[in-house]
Image 1 (cartoon, rainbow, N blue to C red):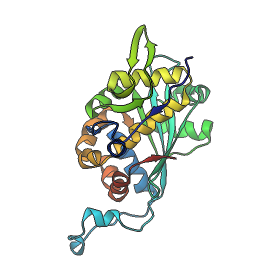
Image 2 (tube, helix red, strand yellow; image 1 turned 90 degrees about the vertical axis):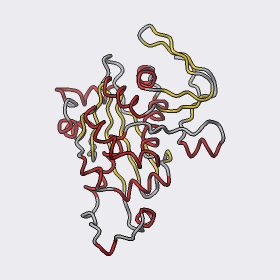
Image 3 (cartoon, rainbow, N blue to C red; image 1 turned 135 degrees about the vertical axis):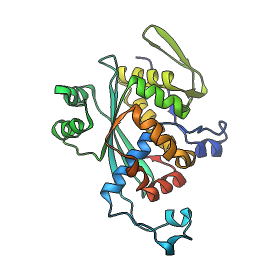
Image 4 (spheres, helix red, strand yellow; image 1 turned 180 degrees about the horizontal axis):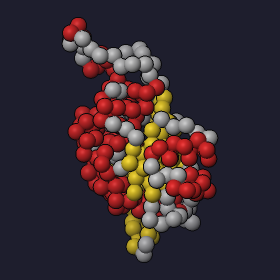
Length: 264
């Protein structure tokens, strides 16, 4: 395995501040993740407040500035690959109040245990399998196959990554090159890079890619277009979320879009 190259995964706001690239975000990553976060906050918090006529003058900014604690939520994200050694699964913990995310990649052995007896074939089985084998209860599950991953990433524009030096890797006989500086990885390239990192045991890159997708999903641009794209992209994956879940956590989503999502 070649030496690990330092990599950065930046939101548009961070890129602009550091003047290292053009504005990123052509609505990136997985809107499905936005829906999952919405769902989790809906279930974890009290009944949603339904505005009445007296609330009609309240602006989105005022809602986002509410002192109400939004809490945290845990998600399981799983990419099922055609190669047995390239499945990727992570636990993503999002703290809306602190606007932070912690990503923990699961080991190959852990994923093998989860997949035993089709444990990851449906979202309900995934919840049970996680409780049995990982001793972890999660709020929502998102399961993707290769086609769904690529379709979603392409529809959303891809993920910007920044490298200190040129990196090359081979996947299924095809040599791929990531250049020094900015690289926009769309569906196919992003999928293969994530799978390559998984096969090589490069946990740091796996976690950084998943975190980058999460942070970009919760961008201001995504927040503005999320409801439209959610209905389009939800059919590309298996997930235990609904369109109503997406709507019910507006406060949490507004805050995360405003503050960004830093790595913990």
